Image (cartoon, rainbow, N blue to C red; front, side, top):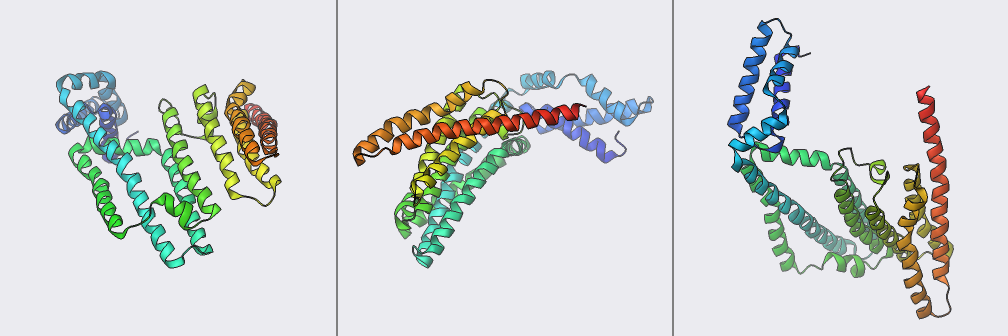
Length: 358
């Protein structure tokens, strides 16, 4: 029910937003539609209907929202085209200028960390913490993609010109910061991460930032047609072959990057390497009741080929070493272990669902 005028206002506003999702009508059209809903609801209320019933009947008389959008699109052909250009400008400015601005900000921050702490342990902890924070921020943005898209859509629908102008602010700040960093003769972010601080932890966390960005893009691309909230289940449940192959490449890059940490003994390196594949195999198994083996083979195939080819080449170059065999066996063992624990988790989920059914 709608016990107050405020709730009726919210209901009409929500309905107009629903109709305007395609961006095919103007603000005057929205005002006219709102006025029509208010008048129709008021008339129907005087005929004996409740406010809720009157509002629902008034909406039903207008017709399906898709039909309304098509009618408005016929009248306002330029609106959808203008909004499309607005989305292109906003999208370009956000995806180019914001990451570039963040990189410039990190270069400046790393510069001052280096000035204040040189390459001390404090500097290494600060830089590694920066990189971990960035990785977490990227996944938070990916997870909130629906809310971010809805926010941008609402802003473009409300005032496309103002939204486009505001989207140029980060781009302007980027050019200003680029000029400032050039005058200060700052090193690049890569140079700071790999050479200035000269730390395996900084280097590893830097690679994790790059791989997190790539992984975030992969998740966004493969979740375009999915309306549910992004989660491990939504991504790993019945995954496509292309998605598994890309995740396989990312898993191998992450697993191989653990060698940069240069653990004191080989066993620790193997455990860190295998942990990545075990987690991947676990998630694939626990979210898929069928086709476990096919998914797991697709997931691990790139790693096996990569470790075989490049591992043997590295062994030959080092001379009389067999590290490639150790890592291949660790990979296969990790996938089997993930399958084992994943089936245990799958059985627990099935038992919980059965108990809830009773």
